[in-house]
Amino acid sequence: MDFLPTKGIEYLLSISYLLLLVPCWWFFVARTRAAELVPADASRAPGWFRVPSGFHFHRGHTWARRDEDGLLRVGMDDFARLFLGQPESLTLPAVGERLEQGERGWSVRVGGQEVPLLSPVNGEVAEINAEAVGNPDLMQQDPYGRGWLMKIRAPRPATGLRNLMPSKLARRWMDQTTAKLGTLMGADVGDVLQDGGVVVSGIARELGGDEWPRLAAEFFLTDTEDA
Image 1 (spheres, rainbow, N blue to C red):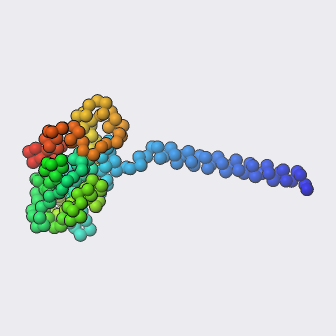
Image 2 (cartoon, rainbow, N blue to C red; image 1 turned 90 degrees about the horizontal axis):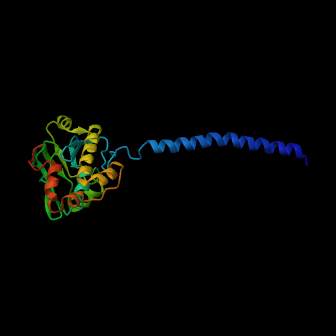
Image 3 (cartoon, helix red, strand yellow; image 1 turned 180 degrees about the vertical axis):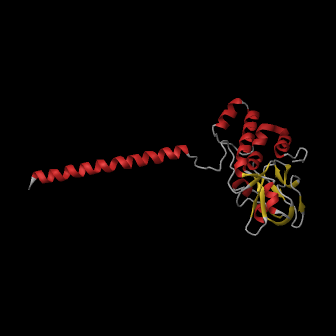
């Protein structure tokens, strides 16, 4: 057996391994660093609440989105579902009923109280989500998906959406809402909130006690029902 050529081949293989190891290590470190710099969910505001792209938001914490059929699909946002907590039932207007932007659109029953929310757009109710009516938990599980509430036939859909906040602007607004909530919770909890702490469902009752419906009316703009 020729010892020297064999050892030479081993040296070459070792050097080749080291040369391959450096770029592989660099690739792994770069990927890990990128994952640390880019949030896993870019739709989530720095606080607790998701604001996905493609939706338009009303300051009463409801949203609208245009469907392929031209109708406007509407629902309540991530803040509303966490603020209210587990819903007991849902009361929607009848098909054919007329809604006005910034006026009462529907109500959610939580903790034995009826909580109204404002319609984000003008128009006629074309369809209701019977699945959500039968299973209000869908609003908690998927407020921007299966938990949608109604479809509205708006006379001027594009104009109606322009009167709302697009996602980019809504994220900044949600940051302000988060900061206000942190102030109500106190300094320690507020700091945790700003650091991305995990929120529990039913914030209103935790903060407001027996007076939580008044607090809900303040955030949902239904204390005067004037948005």
